[in-house]
Image (cartoon, rainbow, N blue to C red):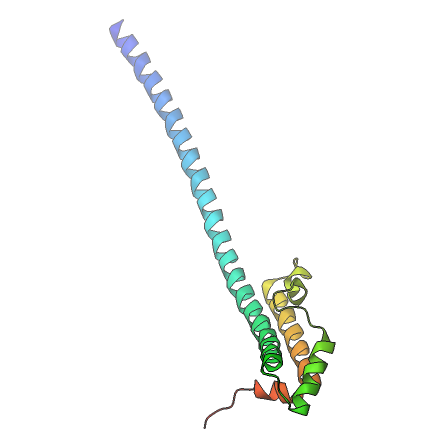
Length: 149
C-alpha cells in the first residue's frame, strides 16, 4: 500500500508541478508581450517626438527671429524709413506668437502618418515664411544665411 500511496503522491506532484509550470509560463508570456508592446510604443513615441520637436523648433525659431528683430528695432528707436515700414507691415500681419498652437499642424492631422504631418508642417512653415518674405523683404533678407565660399 505504501507503494500505491507513493505513486499517487508522485502523480499529484507531477500535476501540481505541471500546473505551476504552465502558470509561470503564462505569466512570463504576458510580461514579455507587455514589454514588447511598451518597447514598440517607446520607439514610435520617441521618433514622433523627435520629428515634432524638429518641426516645432523650425517654425518657432523662424517666427521668433521676426518678433525679436522688430522688438529690438522698436527699443532702439530706428529712423530707417524702410525698416519702419516693415515694422508696421509686421504688426499688420498680426502673427500669433511662435508657441501658439495655431502654428503646429499636428493638431489638424492627428490621424495621419508622421511623415505626412511633418510634410504638411513644412509646407505651412514655408508658406508662412514666404508670406513674411513678401511683406518684409528687407528683414527677411537679413535672415538668409550666406555661404562664405
